[in-house]
Length: 256
Figure 1 (cartoon, one colour):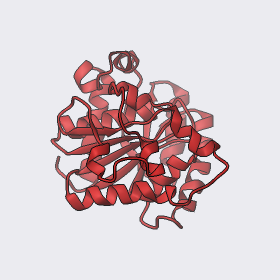
Figure 2 (figure 1 turned 90 degrees about the horizontal axis):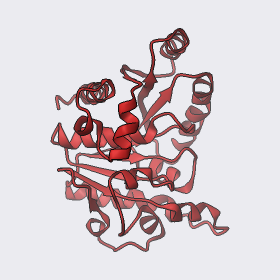
Figure 3 (figure 1 turned 180 degrees about the horizontal axis):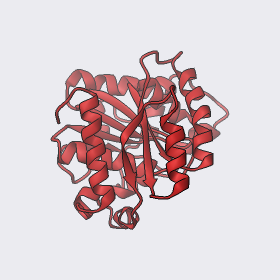
Figure 4 (figure 1 turned 180 degrees about the vertical axis):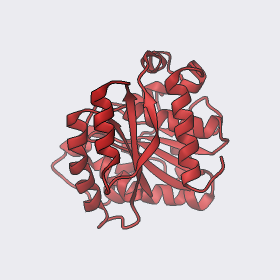
C-alpha cells in the first residue's frame, strides 16, 4: 500500500482536483483499491464526493473515532474508492493551545492497521496549503509527495520553501520522498513555456513529463461533482490526467 500526499503551500494550483482525479482514475480505470483522505479543513474533496455525515479526519487525529479503522471509512459511489472526509472542525486542532503529540502519529497508526489488513493499494491525501497538524500527521504517514504547480512566478518561487519543509519532515519520516512535480493549468503561451523550461532544468526536482492543460471542463466537473474521466472523458484535462496516472504507475514499475 502506497501513501501519497498531494500538496502545495500555494492555493490555486489544482491540488484538490489532482488528488480527486488521481484517486478516481486509479480506482475506476485501473482497478486499484484506493482510500482518499481529505486533510484540508476547507473540505472541498469531501463536498466533491457528497459527504454529509459520519466520522472525519479530526476524529481520527483526536482519538474520538471508533477504535476499528474500518468504521471510520466511507464509500464514495465510485467502485474501489473509499474516503475519510474533513470539515472546518479540523482547523480547531491548530487553534487549540494544548498540543497533544499523539495526534501527530494517530493517522500513521490508522493507516498501518489498514496496510496490515491489505485492503487498499493506494492512499491519496488531499493536503491543506499549510503545514497544519493534519498536514504534518499526513506527511508522517506518507511514502511520497506529488506537487501540483501552476506555472507563475509565485508558485515557482514557493517551491524552495516547500522543499525545505519536506526535508524537515524527513527527521520524522525518513522514508518520505518527492514523487514529482505535476504542471497544471498549462497554456500555450511564452511565459508558461519559459517557466516550464526553468522548472525542468532544476537538478533538485523530478517533473512529470505529462502536463495538465487548462480547460473550463475542470471547473464544470467540480460543479457536477464528477471526476473528469466521467464528466468529460474527451476533454484535454481528462486525457492529461489519465496520461499522468499512467506515467505515475509506470514510474512505480506498475503496468496498471
